[in-house]
Length: 241
Image (cartoon, rainbow, N blue to C red; front, top):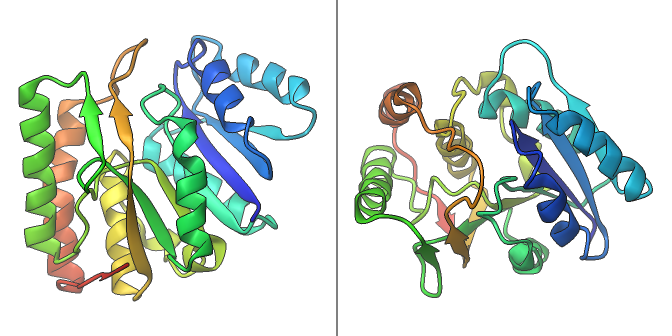
């Protein structure tokens, strides 16, 4: 299978070359870096990587309103117009190890429309998180499952792989979330569309360099989004693998 890996960036100039090298060590993979106007020069670093990797990496330079959700929506539209069999999502901060990409792609090849790299299934784990962060993440996922009915252990993981035909079923124009709750919203719509959702174990490592993008507004949106989805569309039940 051929894959297009979407990597949104904002001030990740030091991390990006490392993660790109790990991703492109695998065959049949191309990368789209979606830079959100990084003031630290990440966009220029990405352009240089595009020259270095001889056409396997392209760069989208976004301007105007920033946000993880907006970046991914723009990336999804490019991916849907491509010939890639699968579309992967991952962070640029080295928390998502590229060595897990083959397992995500294998799950897609086996029929899963959406495969989530999960910290909370057998074999998955988190490294270097304080106890309060572990508790917050666990409570957040329990809350999301109880409110929306989506039967996924790790709704908030950003390490994912879509079959392109499954991604085409997601109503991108109706996605309202901008921050990390974007991940919850697209998972909800996948479940509502009857797309088969699978989870494979990953090891998540807290970022080594740079500053977390988690803010108070992002946390508020994360609380509101599951309620909005449930009230607007009703509860769903995903089809696990």
